Length: 125
Image 1 (cartoon, rainbow, N blue to C red):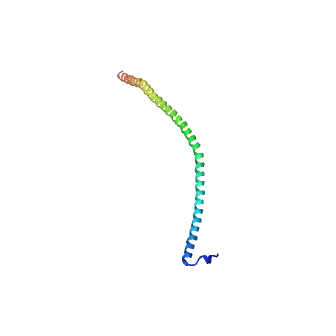
Image 2: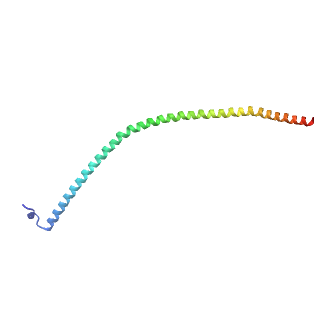
């Protein structure tokens, strides 16, 4: 039985053409689905690899952040101590200034007065 004997009219040719086109479409779809499956499998393995590498990195970063937080707290306490020390130094400086300035001003005034009195005495004599 040859193909020419089975196909007898235009409708038979049309049915044959539609069946052949359907078979081609099914083959193309099968090829596309196979490629999509390959891509999805590749993406899954990529995601698994990323997860396997990032989970340890995240725990390492967490440890580093904890260490940095401890150092920041230590630096904060040092800064507080420096601030207190600076305030104490300012207080001591002000106290020394007052303690030295008042007698110094008095000594200068006394010297000025003695000099003035000495000039006046010389003029009077």
